[in-house]
Image (cartoon, rainbow, N blue to C red; front, side):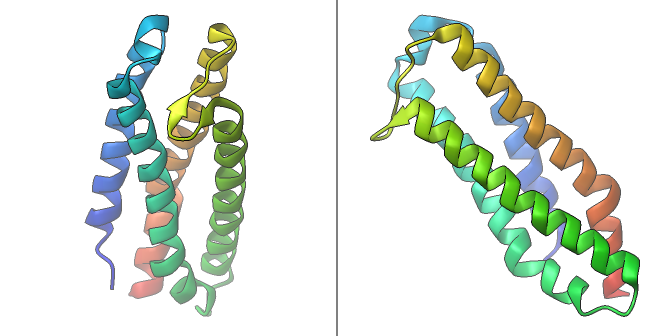
Length: 140
């Protein structure tokens, strides 16, 4: 069984990256640097890896549990994962090309990026408050 500590550590890394990127994206010149791109794409990879880890390790055992609340929680989070992946795919299609950021409208880039950070942050909070406790109940 996957340790929830692994997922919590993953969430911590995602949160750290978003905090650093929140500062960096405000400086237009920094957005064109390789360092910024490296941090940015690492953030996107961390989010995708985290969601994929949950897909592989949490939902299956929750979906076969007798408790309807546990099943519904798993279903809701699975649906949320699909939506977050879709939103991130649209975002990267708009702002990224061949491993670099392509920013034509800096203010819109900031707004869109902050929306992604907010979406992922809300997910992290919901995981801590709802998903992980349901997973623990399912494993008991």
